[in-house]
Structures are given as C-alpha cells and as structure tokens.
Image 1: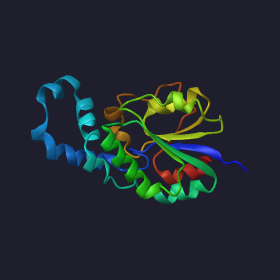
Image 2: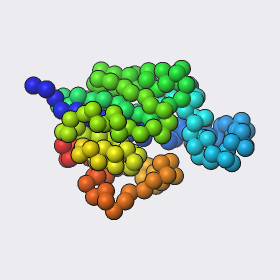
Image 3: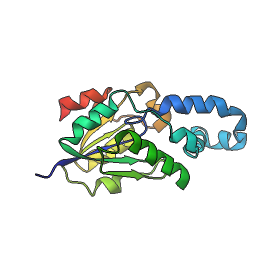
Amino acid sequence: MKKNNIILDADGVLLDTLPYFLRWLFLNVPNFDIKKLLNKKIIYLLEEFGNNYEAFSSIPPMKHSIEMVEYLSDKYDIDVITSYGGSELNNKGREDNIKKYFGKYINDIIILPFDYSKKSLYADYPHETIVVDDDIRNCQEAQSLSLKTLWFQYYAIFSPLIHHRTRSKTDKQILQITSLKEIQKYL
C-alpha cells in the first residue's frame, strides 16, 4: 500500500536553528559589512549565516523531532524542503546535518535558495499531502493548493521578525502547533 506524503521544513521545524543563529550573530558582529546591513537589514544577516558551513553542519534537532519523524515514517513518505540556501558547500553541510539525524526516515531533501517560494514543488504532491512549516507564507502556498497545513510556531514570538509575514484572516484552515508532538492529533 502506498503511503501518503508529508513535507517538513528544516530550520525551525526539524532543526533548532534560532539559538545557533543568535550565537553566530553575537560572535560575528565585528565582521559585518555595515553598508549591507543597513541596506538589507535582517536579510543580510540571514544570508551571511546561510553561507556559514560550520553553523549549518552542526545545528541540533528540535525537541522531539527525531522521535516524531520516526513515528511519521511508519505512515508517511517524508520529504524535507527547506529554503535557506547558501553556497553549494554550505548546502552540502545542511544536507549532511539533516541526514545525520533524520536520514533513515526521509526520502528526499530539497534545499532551495533563501526565501524561495516552495509552491511549485508543493504542486507536484497529491492533495492528501501534509505540510509542516514555520513560515506562514509557505503554509499559505500549501493551503492554496488544498494541502493540509500545520504552521509550526515553536518560536512564535520571533516569527514576524524572521519571516516578515503574519497570519491573515483567510488562513483559518492553517492549523497552528507549538510542539511537534501536536502533529499526532491532526493526522
């Protein structure tokens, strides 16, 4: 029997990226290009972090993520689609890090450029697919394709700063969760 699909985001869903980003930020403040920082603001910092092989190859998993992915793998084919990007070498570090913790449970890892829309990839999945992401835009795009969507808000207070978007009144079908263990009650 063919399993249904579930698509998981990496940063902020599978991997606990925020604390590592903050530590990297404070350690690297003297190295920032002030003109780029003033012009691009947080995007500049996220891009610089995304090009840091050591940071992305050592990010630990989110609390309960390994257990949840193992549980889900019995019932679902799991793909990871992440849009942080970086250089080829750093993307390899991200892929290796994801495989280190989740490799035996997932089918595919797709790493897209920073802030890239995942909608065209979501469109290739059947309507029974479940998407779990911490970026409301990705959730909105999945919902627009009639995919079941769970908005993971472990670091909810930081979401508007990181993603520059907020939930709209039309997003009522997007279910909000704050723990990966909550996924079970929506399946």
